[in-house]
Image (cartoon, rainbow over all chains, first blue to last red; front, side, top):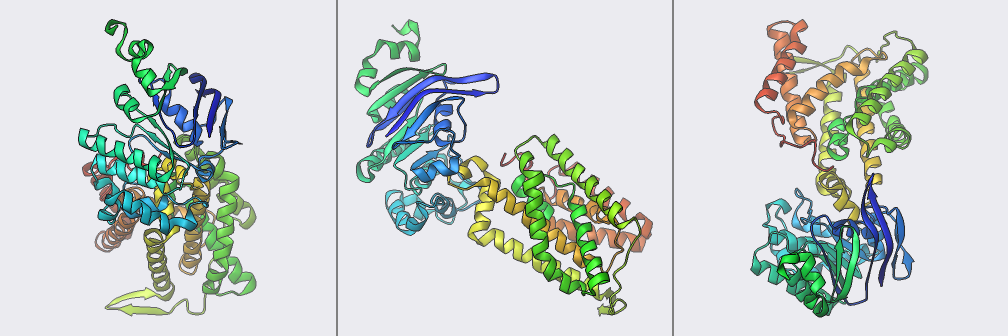
Length: 238
Length: 271
């Protein structure tokens, strides 16, 4: 449903992505892996429209979306949860979540989606009148994912959903991501540095190094791959 | 109020704010001189006029620089300020003009203090506008969209919010507020091309003292500044009133660099 081909992205003179390519099929959970500075967030930001690529094409459900503005792309069915959750700190949890359904495609169904979200994420209801910045990191991540779901996307992209969270919360969010796929039929694309954790959750992984896609394969394959061990553990580990 | 709204949402300090106030005063003057409109009738007519002026000035002048660096924005709004002052000078000369209403000399007495009717009305309308704007920002959906954009522009765009439209709306409301203020002040103060400066200096002090972008803080700070100004001119002498509140301003900023109610780094939030 999502295809990225030959994507070049640069910040001024610094080129962050070199002919990056990847795809996500309907109902798939895909992990984007790679060391710091590999271009994972840049890839996601370009898909959602926050960055305009220099070259290449991004197609979503048969429509070209590269270079489209972010507020348009979300209406096409791609929700993007930014790194470090980025809730609106001085708005309540309820207002944060309601703003998630701002796009014209989700707005008419807002009440119905909210009821669904409150069932999936009990915290959204329990903490509805609290200002977002007063929540713990794990709670904020739940609300951020809930806000992403409010857009009624077909593809949910989450940048580092597990960053800085306690193991119990990591487990809980992993289960939620699975439920979003199994019960709501969403495709999920997420970024994670921890290979083991990522590939246990994802069906497939896509590995970036220095702005290039170097591997793309099923999770089970990648977990066995010597190349993956080289990238993430260094040559010594072999 | 318009100044802190524009800064709060767009992170742009509008140095041309006083000139829009001046334009408001001229609108009131010409409507009075040519059409014999009472300034309070002009108030209603000028509201759509200033909404239009705000929207057009955003499209033509602010939109290209809204994502540019602070230096560019400062040059743009200072340039706009100088341009508007000189356009007024060429069109309407440097002469001070007055709006002399029939009730010019009527005075309202409140517990020993005497107020000019026009001052009294200006205060009342200002309080009403502030309350309306505050309620709008706090409770309306559009107000929430504007606050969300102020707090995190990227995340807002990902919600489907067209942040450029939010900026246009914010600028327009800010200009409309100050235009209305200009019309209200015209019956009280002389109208001339640099008339905006005297008001906007005190407005900057109030906005910075209150904590940049904090509307409630700016309101409270403006009351403090006004109290110091009035008390100072009564006790020490009218010539000293600006000195007094600017000294207070420096003193408070030395103790609390972010203003009375501001949080540090407010100027960077939302970029």
